[in-house]
Image (tube, rainbow, N blue to C red; front, side, top):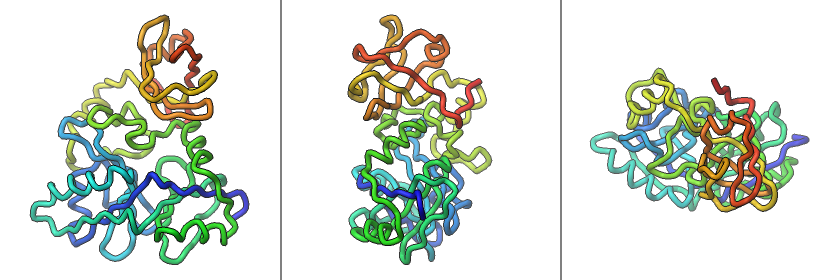
Length: 287
């Protein structure tokens, strides 16, 4: 396990979706293909408004038996559970918020390493990027000691967050404004959060139209910032004109939703008087 670190993700919670119709139920709602979920293999997906705007993002993992675990934002998990219940209708599913009983950890630092095998813990490779390592879901109060006992190095949340920011990967509503954000402006296609071959799901029409009509004019990108990172929502400007907006950030790095024309121009950008330098991550291929 040499080289592996772990961080507890206390801002993440867990819902359990059980019952014989669990796969078909989620398949008609979220952006990815739930039939691909298997032990050790999870998907990353989003629930959208009917107009194709972001509501929630989640990892969907197989916990064994007849239950899927949805790892999502802790503070917004109850609202997601209520939303899913509204769509339940006659589906034979159960929906339970298990955020108090379960906790989440990220294991990272050695992309080629195998995840630790811990009894009673659901572990899966982060389906977005190999560099993000693995996610683990286990009983609250147990993961930290169990991972340390396996020789992994505990790291503060800020260490994992710095990796995420460097890679340019969004983290729920910290980066995706609820009922406003579009998936394809925020990396969901390249980060394997959308399946283009599955059947219909809520918000699919706008998502597909955005892709096939090449309507993507903004992208969420990692940026470096000179000095303290301004607050999320701060305008990014070019020659006094608004060309984007900062999202989450710390330690001289942040994510920002930027107009691609401004990024390509090479003209200096700034936010609250601080120089903003956008970067194009390797996983993102811009036309």
